[in-house]
Image 1 (tube, helix red, strand yellow):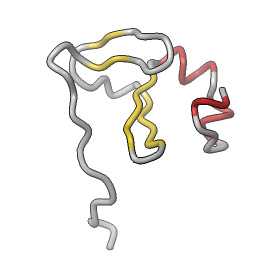
Image 2: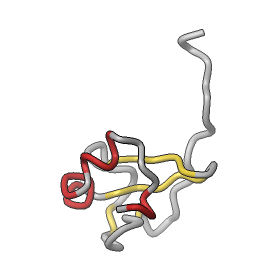
Image 3: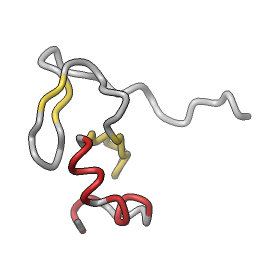
Image 4: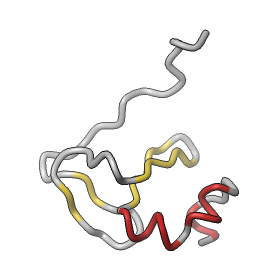
Length: 66
């Protein structure tokens, strides 16, 4: 059961990954960015946005609340 995939791999655009909060762009999938699944969609947040909202992220609040 541990190896069971619960979500499909997120598709990354050719332009890179875009932060859903501030619009920052990075090449590929940065390992330090945060990925959140909300309403069946994947959202990526850059280091700064993730740090600024870590309590809301850990509390599992949708990004619309923060």
